[in-house]
Image (cartoon, one colour):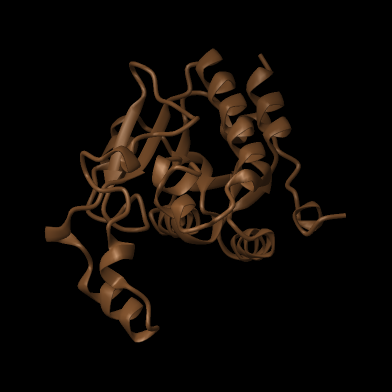
Length: 218
């Protein structure tokens, strides 16, 4: 049994993630993060382990569309003028190339485009400049305007932008559900550890199949 299968999976009730209160969030499924042709792929990171996650995200997107649940695509869009100086110094102190690593998902470049899991007309898009979708964005306003109090969160990477967004969502008093098989990291152990930490502190862990089943109920 894998680490993710040992997670405390919640007995998901349809009312908890019902239409009218819930949004499906897709975080950072972009070329630079997800494609072998993107920046991280060019650095040699193996992207093949992400593919099952992307297939499950697309299943959830289709399920959400069928019951008119809003789908919010969240994307990192960076610019040299607004790069985090704290992040750069943090990289430099580790002996890493801060300038090269900052040039990920640059605004207007191919690496920032969505990959595999694609928005359609009517879907919402939130662009962010840091890990969390809440940091200096209109994400919270979008949710409040639609009376959404519950998020089903998917995407990459589990321990970074997904977890940062989940923790901020909890701090903003949203109910957060994570389908464990619809988010992923480049390291399976990191993925499992992040899910366990969120399950302990701020989110309820479920599965793609359980969410699909909940959304199929009348």
